[in-house]
Image (cartoon, rainbow, N blue to C red):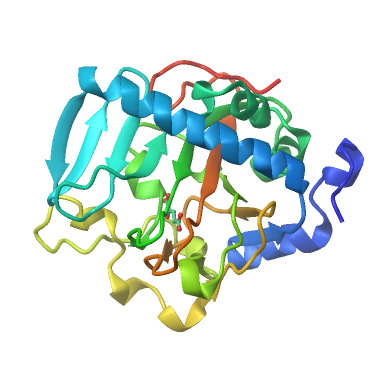
Length: 265
Ligand SMILES: O=C(O)CCC(=O)C(=O)O
């Protein structure tokens, strides 16, 4: 059942607070109606078109043979096969489309985030669109906090919410989280000599048996800690597995990519 836009009803429940502390994540199913999800899907498509159009003026670089393009307003990550033209991640994404800009202020995201961050006044840290197209690549086990700690002094207070735009199964590369891994703060990377290796969590520091597959329908919200070790498999299915990930922070602090302050209304 979709919750009403009643801030009282949207607050963290004691069970969710408990799950957050114990597991580093919790899930709310059925947060958005099919019509809203269809609108987010349309907005996501338009955002990728606009971002791809802007990329000719951007700066292209490769890390471990993976292509990235930084434009004035976003970073585009491409799929990992040679000469891929297909986008894998667009960050940030909300500013490309009014629907996504408005979603930043949606009480279904903001109210629980106020509880997780522990204050009313919030700002946005970053937003991502993970496209995971048919045949798209997975994400190795990592925490977000090691990526962010150099740009932020409150890295413990950057909770994520994944808003699912397609059903997510074990067979299309759903998000996986190592339950309880957030409790140990920032963990060592793999240091395997690659450029990105340091950002992938050293497997000696978490227990794979504690992984939980986030099997949900579209319209779900998966709230997870910036310290939670997480990742996902590739998508061998014939359909995309799209998701938005919005990350919030205490108010009046600048966003990750553009340094602007985007307070939540
Ligand atoms: O979309 C996914 O499956 C994982 C995303 C992820 O780990 C990330 O964006 O940091």
